[in-house]
Image (cartoon, rainbow, N blue to C red):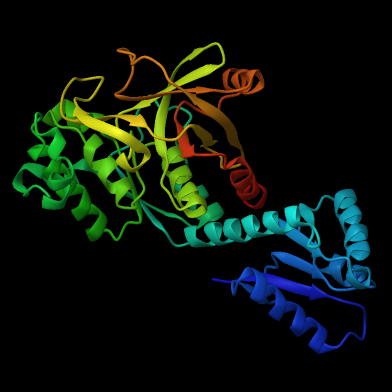
Length: 382
């Protein structure tokens, strides 16, 4: 892919000025930045006198960056165009390339533009249906295609086949030797089944309505979903489309698939997150336990390894995001919540926002402080 850059200069500026500007931009920030006039992502001001041309290239249907240095009145021109944009309802941000802070922000924008583009053409598999209780977490297939270019592939459980007829995935079994106190053969067969579904349907990500599996077959998908995430394939549970889309987005931005978790409770400024499918890569230690709600099958019970996290959530209309940074707090293991648990302390404002205007229950847990990275993606996407 390429990120579309349009260079802007005064009338009569040489072609060399434009070409040198693009060459220098690519040298410093990478080859994704290309001079094109189609679906412009970035308006790059090279001199004063470029205001009229810039205004002709503003686009209300997309977010655009306004980029300038202090040379040749370029930033002065960009300031005037930014004022015009604000007055007329255009959605853009102005960055000053002479400032290190703005240069670093520009790099994050490049990552975000690339992550959004990479979603186009992805195939997401939904096995079963969105779980009944997820009343705020379904997304229409048309909206997924229109906003992100993601093709939602619906797969009925009857089409998947019987996992018991398959051999347990050996690579899966070798990963969980510490959990042999539980019978993980069936979990390995479920993993073979899900891998076959992914391969047969050419899927890039998957979400599974898992409760019907445990209720009818006494086996869970928890361990397999954790394994798939560790292998770099976004895999969510309960058929939650908001969460799996967020996992795909986050994976493109931070190059690590986040943990999808319930908000199990609030105590003061601390929130308890819990779920049974944590990727082992985010844990400092873990063992195998049963699935919390049913006490059947297998699940991951582990300790989160990072000391601070970012939580992330999309709404089902794909026009809002919630992002917050918090500090991990050591806490006792709660018997009333899913196996892997994490207490995180937030500001009072975040707690109040979570209670007053939640976008849903499940949130994604990402390591460290990546609030700015995700908000930048939101600027482009929302």
